[in-house]
Each structure stands twice: as C-alpha cells, then as structure tokens.
Length: 321
Image (cartoon, rainbow, N blue to C red; front, side):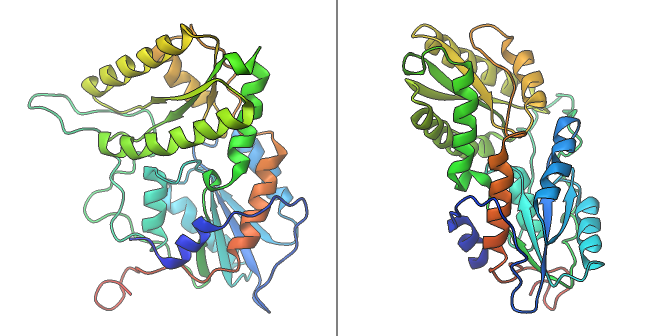
C-alpha cells in the first residue's frame, strides 16, 4: 500500500536547478539522506561530490540502501543536526524494484517487507548463494521499521524525471556511429523473482524507449542480468537476451548502456551471461554527469514540502498507526 504523500512525490516532475537554499518549512529546517546501492569505488567517491552540492542543508549518505542499520544511523546523525524533517532520496533508478519496495516498508509506506527471492527450488536442488550482500530476505516478519522523531519523506526515483533518459541517451550517443541506423540496449540488474522481473522489464522498457527518442536511435531494447538465481532462470535469461542481441545485430550496430549509477557490477554480470561480442559498451552510467546532482537538489527541495509519509509504524497501538 502506498501512501498519498508518496504518490505526490512520484507525480512531481521538478525542473533541474543549479542552486540550493534551505527551503525550511517556516521555522522547520530539513535534512537530506542519500540512499545509494553498491556504492564502492567511483560511486562511493561520487557520493561525496553529491553531498557537497547540497549547500545550506544537512546531508548524510548511505552506501547500501539494503542496510537497515546504516540507514538508521544516517537518520540519527541528521537528528544530531536538529532537523525536523528528513528527505530520503533513493538513488535506485527504477521505482519498480525490490530495493524500493523494502525502502517503502522501512519508511512505513508499505505494509509488508520485500522478498527478493529466486524461484522456488525443485526437490533436491541446492540453495542459491548470491554474491550480493543485500539479498532483501529477512527471517520472520521482517526488519524493524526506521525510527525518527523528525518527519520522514521518501522522494521519487529518477526514472520519474527526464534527467535519467537524457544522461543515458548522451552516454549511448558517444558509442554510436550513426544512431538513426543503430539500436540502443539498456542493461540493468533485475529482481530475482520472475514475478518481480515482469514489472521491472515494463519499467525498464519505458526508460529504453525514452533513450531511443532522445538519442535518435532506430530501435530500443532491454537486457537484464541477475545474480542469486537458479540454473533454470539463468538459462531462460540467457536464451532470451541472446535472441534479442542477435536480432538487433543483424539489423545494424548495437550500443549498450547500464541502467545504474556505476556500471561495473552490471558489466560483470553481462559479460558472464553474454560475453562481449555483438555490442559496443563503455560501462558509463550516471556518475560524473552534473545532471544527477541537479536532480538531487531539485527533488530534495520539492519533496521537502510533503508531509510525513509514515502510515505503518512498529509498536503502535494495534500493530500499526
């Protein structure tokens, strides 16, 4: 269940802004919590640069949006800076994802926690082991929701803004020789469950089409990669993605861009599944493009005008508020 405040955040389509002021709610200053995923290496360095763009406002960041303890500590650090509202900005690029579902649960927007599981095993199958630390599978009812004396707002993801397609279209054009005769492929890390995969594919395909239009490409398509899935799922993924790549390659050049801030993990999984032939790739995602910082500044200011999003709280009378 998604609260009205969150739906308002999703509906917001703020214009990019290079400046930033402390848009206090009367006498109520707010802080910003940036929620990244897999923030290692260049992405971790980029987080520091992004924090510096949020001038005049308290700002903290979390390097793994699946780390409940780290998020709570970020909120606690903002509390020590005496903010009365926290705007959490998810740096997940797709709204329809297990990471966002879990954040909605932690922020009291969603009633049930996320369950990012692979398909159910057949009798005798070995358990799946994932290299990704954030598996979003919790024993029992789920992790405890976040606690904060400040109001909490969870902002919209960047796929609700034209900034995402604009950045990735420019990435794709640097790889293209003649976009009008070539295809652009958007490559992203999809949910482990096949049910979640379908919703993700629909959302990713819409982003890919926006990239095609902005970049002037002949055709757009998506390829998905997953870790921690079962052999049967891996075989289906590989077969489907190979067929897509083969079809596009017979009609012209193919350029591929990652649906990620930092494309290194996407590239690792892509090479493992399809190799490196049949497409051009440089792995550049969103990091390093000033439009990402502009979007964060803009969405933070817009979301700061929204009320507390929490509909469900742990230990409230009757179990929830």
